[in-house]
Length: 385
View 1 (cartoon, rainbow, N blue to C red):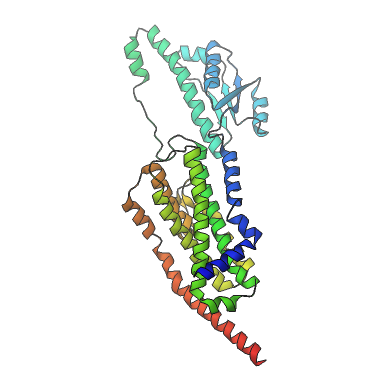
View 2 (cartoon, rainbow, N blue to C red):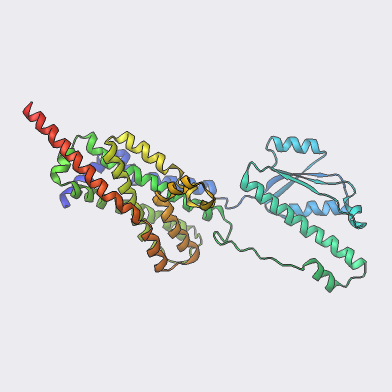
């Protein structure tokens, strides 16, 4: 086995691309992803404000908006200019404070404050919608309190009337509402899965490129495979360890418990990725096609993780596709460890969810036996010829 591991390490050293995959490329990708989301939360999103009332109240509401770190109000003279700015994506929302807003509130009428946001940017639109409404509600509460006090309501009763229902929002995942903690780890899991696929597909295709399939089978089919697993699994685990140390150690992202469970789940995910790649390699026996098919298979892994979209609402075909994605199983452990401090019993159940991939082992055995027999026939034909 030692000689087989040396054989694999020698081939790794002779392949610059493979060396890059197991060393610096994923780390560079991690840094780029962190830089993209390093702002944590969107701030100072431009919002067009058309103040048709020009009253003390309307100016107070604009100041309330300006006090919100998410919103950056920009004044426009008329609705047409504000709409044109939103169509050019200069602003993400338009708010119109109507004429006689203050007067209608004083006489008990219900004026309409028109708020429109660009839902094309889904997260930005939802964030602006909630933040604008929150800012306006805080400002209008002060006006309503003054009106009640003027009508003879006691301050205590006015406070009760304005705060009859108190709500508390607690995020079950991503408690700090930080995009770095929310999006970067799942994207990195998808990236690691793609890198793992490329690494193992290259290791197998290398036998085709160097025409060493007969040597592989002569050395022992499963021994050579184990040598590849023993070389590349620790290297990728080391990569992931560095990435996690940077995310949860250096950057200090929230972590509910230790990373031990994650490392166990990562080993399982890598082994399952190896099984899938080996199955496709045994079927196609073509390096380019293996990488193309595996890339197509793993490409939607981030969408199937259920982080940004509930997977149970997906079509049945998408849910089946998700089940054959190792990262979809791993992300359950990741969220359980990071957000919920899950126990070992939960980890064992999550590891058991991989059981269906064991069915690939007999398929691989049959296919490799067929390849070995074909290789033997070709060698015999060459000798006889």
